[in-house]
Length: 171
Image (cartoon, rainbow, N blue to C red):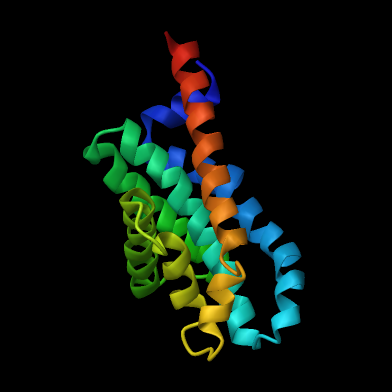
């Protein structure tokens, strides 16, 4: 049994795998995307929220894979563990309020993604990150949400492919 196959059997280990493979790298790559965002003269707090939200969107991507391929009894502890680990990555400590916010927001991203309505997940991203910015409509129009959506779709597609390969290997 490969390690990925073992992760598939345990939602907590699967959450750690998802954090290591998709979420933490998305947070690191947000630094590169942040350089592009500097042209908008964003505040330090907006840039910090931007970085955190990209990691959250990557978590939403891999969570979508889990939600669509596992029963709720697996998804629930997976999502809780992933959000706890995400909060630890972002803030260096655990906070029940932050974990709850991360989980609720992650699930709203999934709902927006699946709804197909516009502006959907992109609008939710802009609302969360740039809530107080007077140029919020311009940020939405000019794609300030694209790095987050790229992280979500990358994590969704790659985690789905990894899961398919692991399940085929287990047959």
